[in-house]
Length: 173
Length: 262
Image (cartoon, rainbow over all chains, first blue to last red):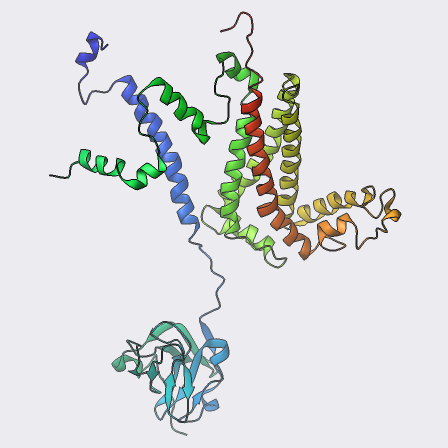
């Protein structure tokens, strides 16, 4: 059925049919490809309605040395802990799978009810499946002398977590 | 390369998964090719046999299939809009504004949904007018005209229920006015004729059931949202299926010989 002229059409030569095929399928693919990519981008919003990661946690003198305060726990999921060096904000999110651990004063242990991970007051993981210590949030004083905790900045390495900005040094009273 | 394209193709085509989806291979004779068309749901809209006279664009204007295409577009964009829209009074208006100004591609999506809805209402009416002027509603197609009227009503209901969802002044007052007409429903509306026979009052009539209260409020927003996103589309889809099935069963109305054409 092939005409004589068809024989002269090479593999890579541009014919009207190939050009129209290219234009047609190109439009089809770019149209639906654009819709697909746009739809994927649609699922990543530019604005979030999540609570602010920063909060004010009272004044340094509100906390006693050796105290593990649970006053911010319900609202902010953070223990405010003061030792002889200063105050730090320990985040109550288990490093295993994200449950909220419980502070047991009698045993001086933080224990997770989900899978039994144990932590010390400084956040160090000592038992159970938790692979790394609990995180501490950045903590500082604002100009009015209020404690400002920023959960957006976290640290759990022993050499970094025990000094500013993850520890607020408080002079001994 | 032992595993070339040909052998990979063969492995896919002969797998049980492929064969369970595409029951027949590529049809190699005329009869099987015809059967592949007539048995396929996606080729099912028109009757098996149709003459070229029936396919004149200036006869059918493509109005029905454009309406159906718009319904698909509206379903797609509507489902996407649902990901960011909350049918609550404190959030609905601001979610709509977020879609316009904050969400990536949100504004174009909202506008496609909005103008697509206008276009669908318009095309449904064009389709109806064409059917009327070409006498396509006459026997044996009179039942499909009735199905078409039901589809028209549910298109209006979808349009009306979607109109409330932006929860701006236009939406609230348009629905207030629209649902106030339901007060005058005979028997079922508290201001309509014979309303006293059923003991209709403002808090137990058909308008009350529609609004979920005596005025347009938070209950109305939730009701219209559920109706708009779930109930009406499902009902419309069911009647669209019947509509298409009857087009195929009753024969295509444009399928007549016209002297001097063809």
